[in-house]
Amino acid sequence: MPAHPASPGNAETHLFLCLKDNYGVLVHDKATGATAAIDAPEAAPVEAALAATGWQLTDILVTHHHGDHTGGIAELKQRHRCRVVAPRKEAAKIPEPDVAVAEGDSVNVGELAARIIETPGHTLGQINYFFPAAKLLFAGDTLFSIGCGRVIEGTPDVMWQSLLKLRALPDDTRLYCGHEYTAANIRFAVTIEPDNAALAARADEVRRQVAAGLPTIPSLLGEEKRANVFLRADEPAVAAAVGLAGAPPAQVFAEVRARKNRF
Ligand SMILES: [Zn+2]
View 1 (cartoon, rainbow, N blue to C red):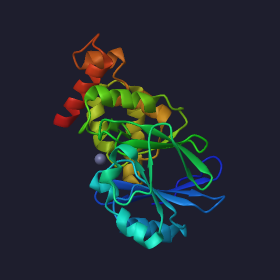
View 2: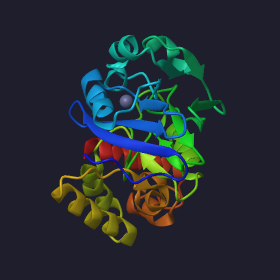
View 3: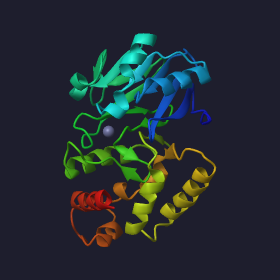
View 4: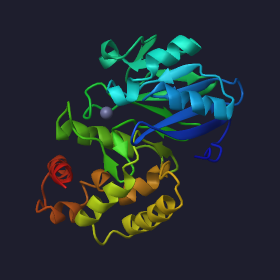
């Protein structure tokens, strides 16, 4: 897959598939040459991405402890002597962490600064890496394009509060997520919001991307706010669509998530 257009400033990204439907992504600081892998599903595709770009791996930024995000860490660390940054609340479940971070902490990739945002729900310790100057969000398995992660360790209420934290970020933030689930997410979302024009527009775009063999991410957070039903549980139309008009948004979110699980 091709590298994506340059971010503002010195950040460059390179996206690639891992395992069955996981994404790996490299973040590169042109000023210093530092390069981070966001998660490491498996080592070989990360090595191939490094070879394709000519970048040197300096850091692995881990979002959460699941094996399909951490399976390549040990091999990559041994080969590249890179630093492993892990969520503090699940550092014990992650191979060889060097730095453990939590809500509000900063972490740098060279001169590129990221802020840590904790979003419990998919796992209890999941973190996101938000690069405000580069306008990049690496959301792991919390927020997908037109979807969200399964609520495995938290409760729907906790997950909804986590999604609200990401929804508060600027519209021009580019969202990188952990999986290519977008087309399947759209098939579900239109069952809840058949008349959402932003969702229909995104469906057209994804159809073209898939037909061209292109990834559907990154997406713009502003578009997700308009089209992603999991960020819209406080919209009266969404509540009404699931038979919960007037109910608290967390309850609406729980119902939407439950329907997706059965879809
Ligand atoms: Zn996961």
